[in-house]
Image 1: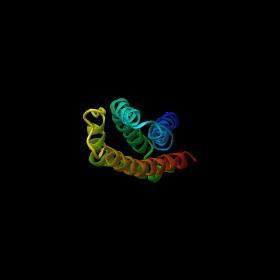
Image 2: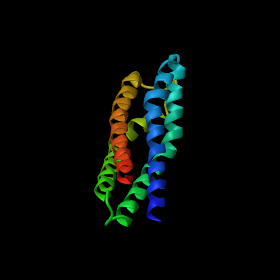
Image 3: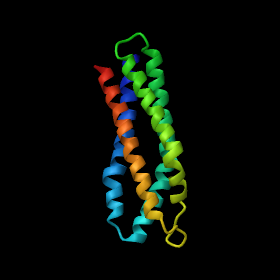
Image 4: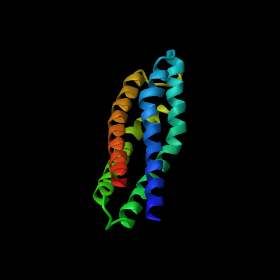
Length: 148
C-alpha cells in the first residue's frame, strides 16, 4: 500500500512540476512573443485558468506527501520526504505571499484597464515563479530519491 502511495504522490508532484516548468520556460516565452494586446490577454487568461487549478494541485500534493511521510515514518527515505514536504510548504507560502497577489490583479486586466506598469508586474511575477519552480523541482527530486 505504501509503495502505491509513493508512486501516486511522485506522479502527482511530477506533473505539477511539469506544468509549472512549462509555464516558465515554454508558455511565457510564447506569450511574450505575441503582440502587446495578445501578450497581455494570454497572460490574463492563463492566470484565470491556472489560478483556478493550481491551488488545489499544490495543496493536494502537499497532503499526499504528508500522508507518505506519516505512513512511511519508520522506512528509509522518510527524511527526504519530510524535507520535500517542507519545500512544498515553502512553495505554497511563496505562492500566497508573492505570486497570487500579482496573479489576482493580472487576471482581470484587459487592454483597456491594464496599468501602465503591467509588464514590470508580469516580470516580477516571472522572477518569483522561477524561484518557486526551483523549489518544487528540489522537492520532486527528493521524492524521487526517497523511492530508491
